Length: 209
Ligand SMILES: C[S@@+](CC[C@H](N)C(=O)[O-])C[C@H]1O[C@@H](n2cnc3c(N)ncnc32)[C@H](O)[C@@H]1O
Image 1 (tube, rainbow, N blue to C red):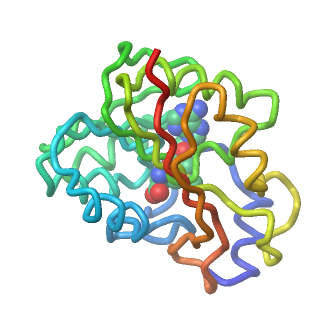
Image 2: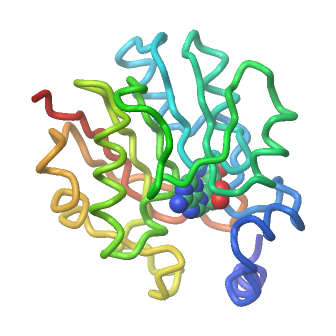
């Protein structure tokens, strides 16, 4: 996707569900067929292989699909019914379902791991506490949230909140009451844009009560 196409995408964005209804997932800016390189590195380094894994805001479903190649029990959720309908065609090994993380119907302590690739940075500052509350609720004790979000150092994207560009401190301020901040590293979103936008990759471990 060129810079001009990205501008057009933002100007004409019809909302998540209509976008998934009308657009092939392969051309979406965030589309990445392979497992996110930071997550893959984290899984391999720590020999994670089993447990309940949520791919939050799964969209095209590619990250959930890749995770299902390990021995994880994988769930992929998204607010868009159209996204879920398309993702379901990818695999029977993933439990794909519609769920709004801000009003989640997922049960308490269901997941050992959650991957957020590009969802937290959608939400306005006022919505962040509700997001953190829900993530904390559905994560198991000592569960881990892997968070990938846009970085404030990315200059090729406008400061228009689509998505929000976060500082490291904003991540710390949002999560440090309920989570141990294990790491926050500089990274990038590898998708279909002509450049890879600069991001943060954070590993956040739920504090046990
Ligand atoms: C930037 S896309 C990332 C998709 C996917 N994680 C990936 O990396 O390919 C953001 C996704 O979040 C979903 N989304 C937006 N608001 C949501 C919400 N409140 N709850 C769950 N998913 C949401 C959108 O439908 C979209 O698929």
